[in-house]
Length: 409
Image (cartoon, rainbow, N blue to C red; front, side, top):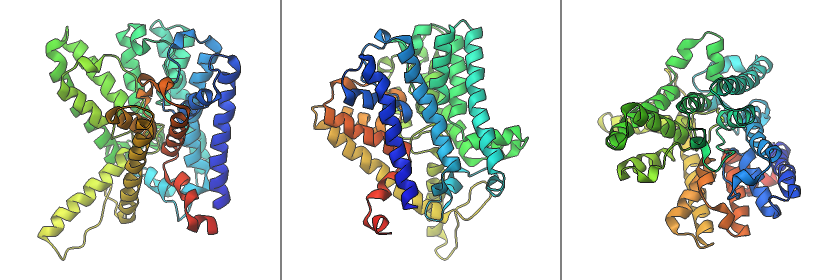
C-alpha cells in the first residue's frame, strides 16, 4: 500500500514535470515555475493559466495544452479503475464512487468495464468533435474544445473563450456534453448495458439533475428582464449553471453584470462539483446526498430516540461508514481551501479573491482561467500546484503520506 501510494503520487509529479517541458522550451513560458503550473493545471483539469494572452501561442502548443486536460481526465478515471488503493479496506472510495451501479458486478468484469469506460470517454470526445464540425467550427478548435469539455478542464484557445465562436449551437453542444461529463461514467456504461433503471433511480444523478434544473429556472427568471429574449436567457442560464456544476468553468456571459442574487447562486455552485467517478472535480454530489440522509436521520432520532437508523442510497443500506469518511473528507477539503487562501493572501491578494482562488484550485474548477495567476509570486504558484494535485487525487491519497502511522507501516 505504502509503495503503491508513493508511486502514484511520484508518477503524477513526474507527469506534470514532463508536461511542463514543451511550455518551457517553446520560449512562450520562459519561467519553469509558470510552465509547471500550466502543466499541473492541465493534467488536474483545473483550467487555471498563467498566460495572459492565449492567442499569442502557436497551434501546436495550444493543442498540447488542451491534450493535457484530456489525458488528465482519462487518467483520473483510469486511476479509479486500476489502482489497488481504491479496492482495499483502508480506502473505500471506489465503493462510494460506484454507488448506484452494480458494484458486485464490477470487480469480476473489471477488464471489460475498464475498456468500456475508456471507449465511452473516447466516443464522447469524437461525437463532440463531429458535431462542432457540422456547426461550422474549424477542425482545430473543434478538437481542442472537445478535449476541454469532456475532461471538464476549461482551457480555451482564444482570449474571448466560448463567446468567440458566436454560436448558440456550439453553446448548446457544450451544455449537453458538460452535463454528461459531470455524470458518473459507470452509469453511462450501465445505459449501454440497457440497465436504464439504475440511472433513472440513482440518488446522485437525480440530485445532480435537480440542482441543475432548479438553478437554471431561478437564474432564467432573474436575468430575463435584461435579456433580449427568453431563449437567450435560458441558454445563458443553462450554459453557466452546467459549466459551474461540472467544474468546467466556461463562461458565455459576463455574470458580474447579473443581479447579485444570481451571482450568489453561482457562488454556491462552486461548493458542489459533479458526480462521483466522473472527470469533474469538487466535493462531489454523492457526499452531499450521504450527509443529507444522515441529517434527516438525526432529526428523526429526536422523535424516536431509541430507533435504529441506517443510511440508505438507492434502497441499499450499509453506508454508515461512508458518512464518517465523508465528514472527514469535507473537513479536510475546506481546511485546505482556507490554508490555500492564506497562502494566496500572503502574496498581496485580498482575502475574498484569495478564497475564490483556493476554492477554484482545490475543486479543479475551470474558472481559474479568469484569475490573474501570472501576477502571483512563485511560491504561491507552487503551493497552488500542490492544492490542485491534492484536489484531483481526492485528498486521502496525498495527505495520508504525511501521517506518521502510514510511514511506520
